[in-house]
Image (cartoon, rainbow, N blue to C red; front, side):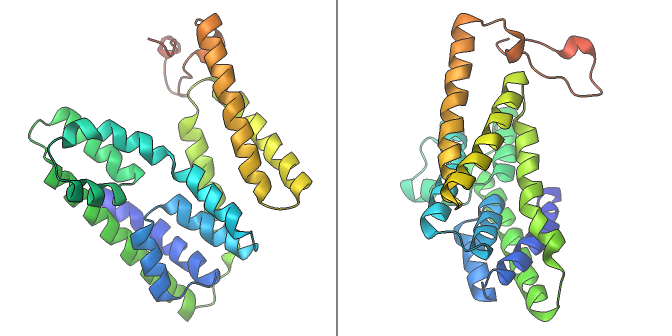
Length: 240
């Protein structure tokens, strides 16, 4: 239930933003059910409002959602013996939050079943879709200042970046990615620059991390970062 309730505020904001981007209530509901990704839906709405090319939107969505291939593969050992139909339904209902809950339950509760995991996904999908539809209705009924809602995508991606920062190298790669994004967007004069910068930054990050792990495995660039409230001894090598 806490997971489902957490979808309501961000779902309302997403519905309002999708309405501002030109989606009616029906389309908002369909997008919520078929895509079921807050980051992807915010990305679609934001890029449509700035008249981004369709190709740029599709490519950005592809790279954004590529992480689900890794997430779903880590759940596959717990879903052995399930039918292809079950796996298909399970895959299209997967998102970051219900993945985290199901992975934890599978790892700690031997009685946790695929059917229960699918129920978690369906309840989260229901709350998300309903919140989006209500947000769309609010957007159509009331005149709302979208300056705060438009920042929702920025806030969402800032959160995703912070959650990915595990060591000093990650911070450097984030800075490189930001600079590349600005340069590529100025060079291409379109959001296609985001796609180009994403590819280049990913390649640079992969090469840097691979080189450091092979030649300098004890480098401080690979040490885990500790949280502000953690003890200094909590800093350790990411290989441990």
